Length: 293
Image (cartoon, rainbow, N blue to C red; front, top):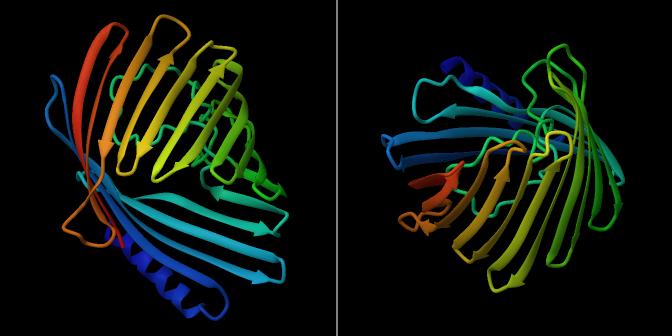
């Protein structure tokens, strides 16, 4: 861990030296959870993330990059690279390479804690979204087709025994409305699979937002659908999973975020979740501490 932190510190020093050539951002955040599920011991989990980003412009062209390192707060886990990518292009199009995440298709609102979900593989169309850790090439072509309209084509290269494929996604934002839809065309040990996912959100004003999500794998018949609503600091939601065989689950969740000692960037979020997976009921609570600095 000391070597990793030294690497981050060295990178930060180099970034500071290059301020004249690029816009550099350095930041960190902590997320720590204490969770108690029914019939289970109280558990601790979380991570500290330290990030470094930079972006340089030349007229309408740009080059950007980011490095983010995460270390577990529960002990035992070594620091790991979360993001490490380079992106270049113009205001019309760009290409991103490295370790990163593509556009998400599984919006669930304030999902601080969701318990008892069925293991519906590929139902949420995130199998090749990114953060690939198997040495494969991950690239994404982004096209800004119109104000608020973006197209992203993600690709994970083929490798024996590993999941690979293509992931075209379209996102659209106009005023209070946001809509995202995409397809995963992938190949893994089980053969070729195709999945579709979409989500939408709407800002009703006054701190109230609502949204829904739907995903389907046409080959395994796995599916997911859900809805959520946020009322200021309070968020509630529901999600249903079907693994395409015998397992289904229904989960309800809620969370409320409070300021922590009125310190800027610090919050405390108690959360509760309950549901039923394959006929077995489950429930639990979680307390999440966040601090961004």
